[in-house]
Image (cartoon, rainbow, N blue to C red; front, side):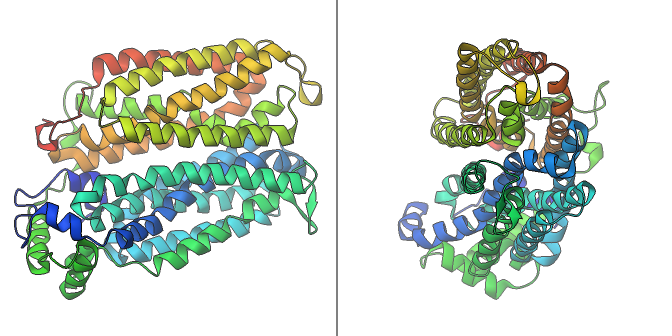
Length: 491
């Protein structure tokens, strides 16, 4: 088995034509008898990786002001430190499949948990900004690993009747992690007198913000010890007796474990391992559908969504809002993000991918344009920065509406599309290329925002609004609806 086989989309792409026919009962009977509470616990334990993905990604938002003050650094150094995690994420995502095939899914989860914890503690006591950036890279590697291993493991252990719902735990866990990180940041900021440079037990609050991550990382490690290894990995490594036991554990007593092992072994034997040359074609170098996937990934990031999650504290302080109030706003947008994600989970299979994406693009374009107009009234810099009450209110409402529109559309839809839109023979590799493009686009936006906002905050948001506007014809003319279509029909 190769790294591509680990991705849930690659497995979903190759369903066995005999799926569920080899067992001794019908799918409905097995679903009724599945130990659902236990399976939910298994999926939730694995989804702690997604929680830490979101937590580590966003926790830096509350600490950036304290970091700037402590190390006396400007926008460029701050941007490089924040974005360093994204470079680590690309590395982690690249090696996760290879590691999981050799060490097992559970051991790779445990490795990610240790990296999250070590990164948190290391980031708490860096001697200089360069060392902090290094620890951010370590945390980013853990993020990249979690972004692959969590959905892959859940897809491999979830009973077929519940796979879709249990798979959604990953995205929900990510947005919960973002929200909890902002709640922790706000609480620590308040305990330090509204200043991230204030002292708590003799340690600056921003250090606590970064170090507290070790707590959920330890919980993740402990929970990973209580869940079974993936049956697919056990079969691939010759541990079929353990695989039978796990299949019975997660699919219920009426499952025929011998038949299920034979089924999985048969599917694995016929899986196609795509190569980079399979993606090549046409004058553009890559197949058109691959470019569409890359475009979707790029648009998802170029609307500037992660500015809200990485820099909103600095953003609101730059228009005259206090640090404490800025962190409270960050918390409220994180809650809106959860609401929007739940809406997407409820609607994506009911009304389709394209309608959600088009509605989200339209809403984001309006919200970002309104924010750009509001920020054009900013005067002064630093502690003298100010924005009139009307424009400040418009900016706040626009930011929350932007997050809502993104969350119910592009935040979920892009990942669903990437798992469905590619032909079977290239799905895993094409998805990997598109996901890599997403990390790179995320890095570009993250590393450029502080300098762009110093240059012209209003113009920066006008650029993001432009990308949101361009995403409308992109969806209309380039994206095909995948709702209700079989994966085999994506030719």
